[in-house]
Image: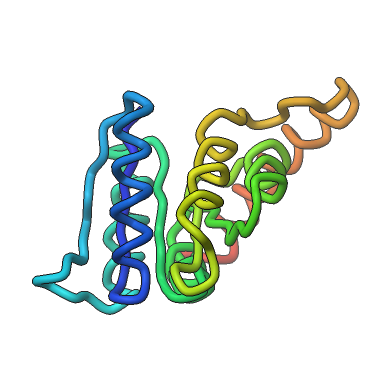
Length: 157
């Protein structure tokens, strides 16, 4: 997969550890910044990464700021972006299997690198509807159709 990664100054160290881990897993990383030489505000990074995931340039995205909240808020303003703040592998698994999240957001001030790698593993290996019985899978399919309808009707440009 092609995974976009990005961070603000509070998430740089964790982003670099996550990026290295993702590459070790065999995925291609598209780094939208920031860097130690070029600090970027969370909202610019989240906006750029969400655009890349939304356009299909990246399959999924990983954002890191201080808490993960700001990045997720901005990313979720884009159509077809489902960003989830995850603080453990269980929430990452559920974000993917239930909500079809395509952007993971984490907090560099609150997440240790070893835990972030576990979260990323869950996020990258879990597919939408994984682990649910047929009735729940049918509900999840319908929910995504309804969500896309709501987005197109209510959140026009």
